[in-house]
Image (cartoon, rainbow, N blue to C red; front, side):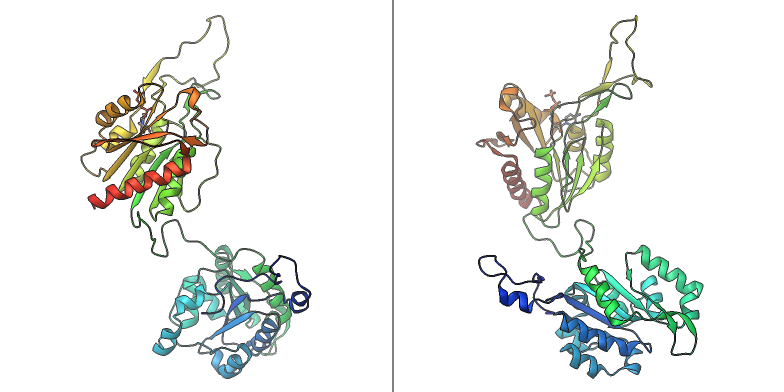
Length: 443
Ligand code: CTP
């Protein structure tokens, strides 16, 4: 372990939340910040020892990785004595890797700092090379990287270095320096490593922002939960079917229930795609969201999201669209009110539930009914070819559309299970439990 898993705040608080006098006196600007310092091989490496000292003074926990070249400039023992931890250099050292692997080393830091960052290290970073501990750690990290370049002025101004710096800037790498001045080689110009106080200030600025770089949803640590490893696609919200460029046919669906199902599936470890019609909700975290407007767009997005293990059709899809959408805004005129002729939209749920090839193992539909809720749901189960129907009443008196609660009955080939009224989140969690149970029997 590099230190405590979560960074403590810079000031300790007493049990009652008040800042204690003791804490104010001992508060350090970088208390418990975990810095992984990668030292490259350049004359400026001696300044990295000063940097370690200043970081430690400010309360930071510093682990050091040195490149082979860096060891020619400073002794690892000095860096170990100043940081208080053994210094790592060797990617292939069984003992060192067993103690803390290079992946762990880069993940347990809050920030990775490369000082001095030589032209060679910058080039490796820009190209994703990973043939030694320093470069492999830089490629494996999930945290922001701050570099303090140091090299001869001609190397710094060389088009290859300019390209690499531009690439790294685009990748989100942070830079401090280089400064301009007299160089060890006798030349003058930009290339001197920034002084340790400036690097410390840049570290403090970098730590003021979130430093973790998330992976796309569903990747990274192996998910745990009842749906771990499964792909779930959820349609949600209304569809808007255009009449002309400014008007549309829509419905009152808020998208809350579908969003809650996507979140519950995600919490159960699934990789989730939420295909959402127009809603006034923020996208849920950790879920891939595809925004659509019309039923045909939703249909295309649903097909594109296959293959999936579970498909949940929670959207209130418009059954019809306007056949001839006006290219211009329809105007009031002598001809009187326009007559809209409607054509049927594709039935997304039925299409996916009846696919011969690539049908998800479990297809769940909703039945939004205003009367004879369970009977209509049973009928829908069969007509649409799905495995489960969540039947709910959307009669105006129920307040389901746009409301926070829902009262549903789960209808399957084996029977009907009425659930009491509960929040849409609770319905979602309950439904995911049912889905997980059914999937167990199928996979
Ligand atoms: N559904 C769909 N594509 C459509 C219409 C509905 O995927 N074009 C899905 C809904 O997402 C829901 C289920 O089918 O899961 C039932 O929707 P509902 O509006 O209740 O039923 P309809 O198919 O419209 O049938 P009816 O209007 O006869 O009740």
